[in-house]
Length: 344
Ligand SMILES: Cc1cc2nc3c(=O)[nH]c(=O)nc-3n(C[C@H](O)[C@H](O)[C@H](O)COP(=O)(O)OP(=O)(O)OC[C@H]3O[C@@H](n4cnc5c(N)ncnc54)[C@H](O)[C@@H]3O)c2cc1C
Image (cartoon, rainbow, N blue to C red):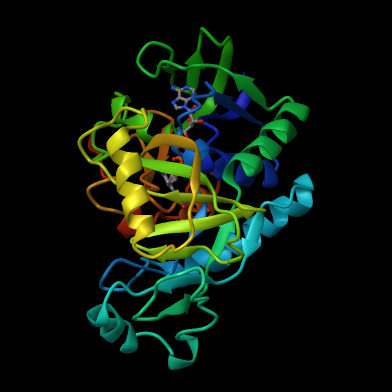
């Protein structure tokens, strides 16, 4: 007998949305489950896509390939949902010192240096450069738009699945008795919660908590996200997000006074205008020791996983969601660089 759904996707963050989108595009019968975790990384994230990071001005892994796919995916999704959530525009990187500027000189075209840095807003004695290609995704609005669309097509259920107790693999697929559903495949896209999933013990999680502040900065008219260790990202009017911290030891989704102080201190190093903190949130990033996404299937059961989007879910979810679906539906190989290797 055919299963109720060809695919059940567990989790509707950036990963699960990309997987479900690809499956629906191929005409597959999909059910998406989500338990509505308000601290899920995708609910907290700023959605910035940044091509160079850190003091060494390191280029993001696999940027060009993933960026092109992301632009196509988010533009299609805007057309499908009618929600304007994706902004493809440069960001601004300010240098913390002369050494950083020297490093960047060897990598970045000179015409991109020192464009439109307003001295009334920023202390930037070493200048900076325009980061491109860059983009910004309003992640919560994007997810809400897809949740509504999946609901409209009877492809969404609010449900907290216990992977240990609720998943019964069979020869033909998977039974989910508490949900009352059978599936051809179950695809886990649980983010950091996947660290407790007993079906995929080989995924090498190395989770990292992050905190973000919402600020009011009267008088700041900078339209670009600005990066200088801490980043500042415009949200409309005088509201900005600022972040983020990176903590490998604390995996609770609770905002901390230390996190807030670190962001405020980083901000004061380059932002001249006074600001008021109006919000503070935290989430845990699904980072792996490989620092790359990871995807694959269980060696014996019809279970699959997409995780490890780390700090770059907006960039990586479209590419690796498509790669997993290509594998599940057409048997196309998964790139060795991101393939899960698990013997049992
Ligand atoms: C502070 C912070 C700032 C960030 N900033 C950026 C940024 O600027 N740009 C960027 O690209 N990325 C950023 N990230 C990273 C980004 O958030 C993640 O890469 C991405 O959101 C991970 O998506 P995911 O779908 O894998 O996991 P999640 O977002 O965690 O989604 C998992 C979903 O699954 C659901 N779920 C989990 N387990 C179950 C279960 N058993 N049953 C039912 N539902 C379940 C949860 O409710 C959740 O909705 C940031 C992260 C943090 C924490």
